[in-house]
Length: 128
Image (tube, rainbow, N blue to C red; front, side, top):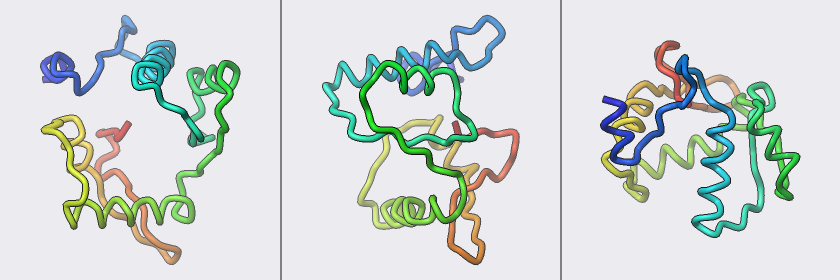
């Protein structure tokens, strides 16, 4: 299934021989995407807990501003509510992207005393 989706441009299969995430491949993809679309990146937000080699490469090689964003409700509640509202009101659309569909179907809204955030329904299905 993923090979067919990769052929359609919805995902990229890792080039790592054991199927692990390839940090260099992610870094090259992001840099090519920014260049091809002539993007003027104003800010790059990242999860400091999950900081990986490719994100560290960015900090060294580009002059973007960087901001850590913790994966906790205070940081995620406003973007989560914005996205939830946009989906409900059909003000955003998505292609027939089965990778995104699987991630969205596995997403649940988690609420605590501070607000809401997206969480995974099943730990085995990653949203990355």
